[in-house]
Length: 240
Image (cartoon, rainbow, N blue to C red):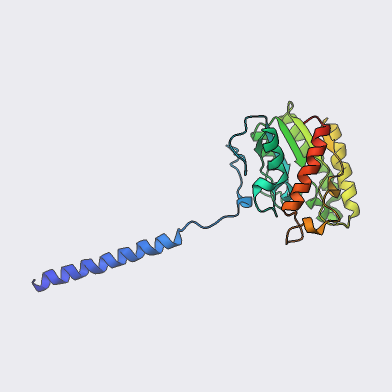
């Protein structure tokens, strides 16, 4: 083999190794990573159920909620109360609930009412208010106003839907004064739009630290099982 041919072969070999190296690096850098399903948000144009089966054929049921309806703290979305009650009733669940969301808290860039409306539900659960307690001292008036705005918007956009409003959930045995005030505003807004109202939900997991996840903020599987039990009892009273 002459020198020119040897040099050409050697050069091709170096280029080949370089390309191979790029492929390996790119392959490792694009390796799919595990994702937290709780951070997945449905498309605003084509709403998709979150954490549900595709076998349900009954009414579409949408949830406007925070982490306690998202199921944060549960070992699986299948164990959150919203998914269990829907599975038991053959309901098609649409659940865009968001961690930390309130009527005013963490609303930048998040329009859950809009997502709920776009899903065209037959039944709407509203389970909001917990996180607004942390803004009450500086924004009580804004919270009260936004409750009325959200309820009015949902009702006008979904005049034929059945609304079920749940007293805001709570997570500690200590109960701030704001919790009662915000709960009262939610109850009044529910009456204004002719919604069913489920009282007492802020007490459902109190005095049971064993029902809380390791973060001390959210229910664990046992806590969600209790919430499911209590929700089923309330829905039975409503004929659902």
